[in-house]
Length: 188
Image 1 (cartoon, one colour):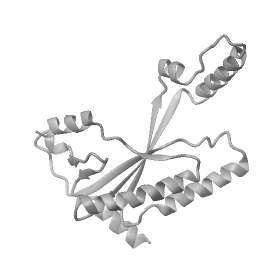
Image 2 (image 1 turned 180 degrees about the vertical axis):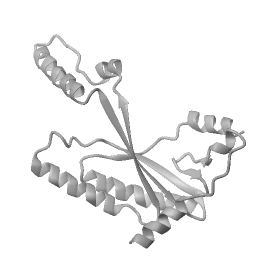
Image 3 (image 1 turned 60 degrees about the vertical axis):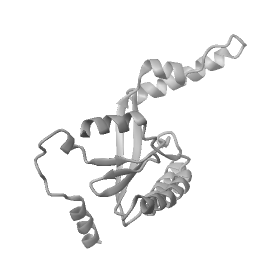
Image 4 (image 1 turned 45 degrees about the vertical axis):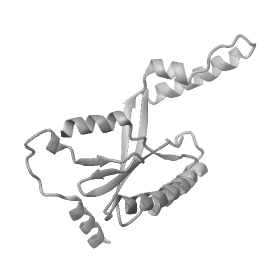
């Protein structure tokens, strides 16, 4: 086990060279339309997954979620590098009010809407108005992008199944044309 971990750590290390330009600091060689990135001679794909409402669950449900999460971690491939990223960001109050809170309708149910909105605002305040975005990034060495595509296709199904047991989903990030254009501009 330790030998495998040590070998994985060595494979991640690359000799450091001082970049001579901004372009040389960007390790991305190519972004494919299906979300695969060519990075440092490997193929990489990132999935975003939803947060689990762990704090509000009962003790029994928390234990079930923990076991399911362990199952997700155990299902991750051993022949690839996996990174889990948690990005904490401030909740945009205007967006929250516009997209999450229920609007008053004047139909006799507004008292329930106000109560529901108050509950949501309290929960947001309890979290210090922070939102977590969670990502799983998997990098693998393959001979071609076609081999990487087949690998990530199988992995996508496995992740959907594993994360589905947690009542959360995983979806491949949409590598937007704007991002691809910006990276191309920086590299050339």
